[in-house]
Length: 497
Image (cartoon, rainbow, N blue to C red; front, side, top):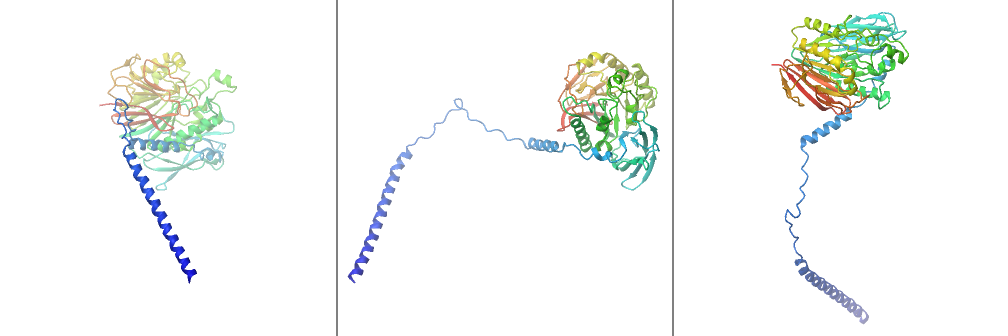
């Protein structure tokens, strides 16, 4: 028992000592805390500096929601600016080559052009997707003068109706058939208004900065974007220099073999690289020939006016709504006054059209120094006579690889300064003609812009460009875009009241 009682006492003693140690430690901790509190209380508040001594930095303003939306939109558009890799092999699966779709004389007509290894008459298989109506249209077939062993086929399909989608293929059983493509007629009444697009100088093969394949892909991107973004467009103008060398079969394939061009009619214009003359034929080592005309089937082609030295292509015209379009061959070997005879003959056929537009490759007012010296004197004066004498509202050209828009000018090439020419402005009942030059659509060549006293707006964005024109009863509205990000570069409106 004594031994057990001693153990109990030992445990009790140890417990008491432990409690005392904890109490002492708590007391010391409390004392230290209380001693620190006065020191914290004595800390001074920060000194306030007057604004003039140390201005506070203002927070950056938040980016407006609309700017954020626009940035997102542009990023999304850039992501869609890609090459249509499906288009290149489509025609190479058959012997049919160089299929092209051209604008008709009127809106219920469309024209097709292709080459086949068969001497038998080619045909167009054409049916309406909505109701299954079908027609087989024969082509005019002749041996090619530029491609041995092939035959040129030209066909015209009529009876088109707005808003209808048509599936078509070309060829024959002997020479093979092309793949089937689809074309939708825009569902608009052209008398009330319509949209058309303009490109220029794809110039496949020029390749100032890059390989030809890159240029072909860039041209494909432009065509794909235009047909996707502006499906309401009635047609696509290409204002000359489709290729770099008039007889190069590979370059013609690079220009024509694109899916986008199978679903919008083309308005091709003769450029200086598209036709031969004696000097160029000798330089390239092969003869010239009707390369331009064998690749395109244009409406109302003249057999007397606008004849090149080697390629007897000719001027042509067509009508859409209340607009008369006259396409001139500025590469003609004939005298310049030939066009002064031709244009009034066409205008006389359509005297009541409200808008009249001339399209040709060479510009009247160039933005390139060497072109100003070489061509301006005769091109400018001839067009000035034609435009004023025939009430021409607008002249569309290419060639420069620079974008420009002119003053309204008269028969003496004098500029009319009585209008607001700033981008986005409107001219009401202007006197004179405006000249617009479209820059390159492929980026194969960019040239420096040189001031011209008759040009009011010019620029070199060093990006592929395209123009959109919206025509209404009273307005002709121009919008110039850099195509890679679909950015508006310039716009202008002509209004008739």
